Image (cartoon, rainbow, N blue to C red):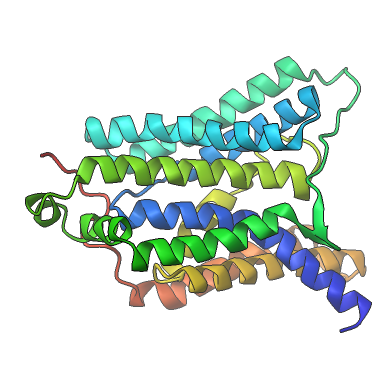
Length: 291
């Protein structure tokens, strides 16, 4: 592999990592029957929290922890309304995304006014040349989630809750507790994915910087047929398309900028159109439960 191809492969890995992390959290939530539409807002909240804490403290580790915590806090708000109040998850998730967009934008302008000198966040360290700690985290997370859902008692109970919540409850499975835990885990992963955007891909926060990555992660779960390795393949596909459009711009290819920018999203839509109809979602996904 020559230098250019190696650089392209590292770029694909870098752009795929936040999607993989967020999608693993969404996978666990959906396996428990919770459709977390608010994942985009949770990623955005995590990105801002990581930027604010990293620039204030200079500690990358603290920024990652706070980003994950902020995602979990937003997930708890979503879980309260959806699980406890049995509100529509699409409405709640949409409201949460709008709230996160407005709140992070307002907080960013308040804490970092435009007339102040531009501040950059410290970056997470590379464990190998070009391979960041976030990439290692994503790989470990994929293996752990695959093992957890397929080989542990709690993982199998979560899958049972997503398929037939009433039947699982009749067998003594704590449906609400597992759905709460799964939703909080999904929020935690979304927050970490947001941190990866700031502490690896970019060194600053920009309003709306997730640019639909939360929705892409949501669609990857469907594209991957609720299987971790296939979800990773989808994340690499999107990351590859993103890296390709950056590379084409760098090479000066004579194509409109907006056309290159939309390439990853168009590719995702095409793939979803081809594969979505063949995937069976958990039977009780997005269905409320009352014990």
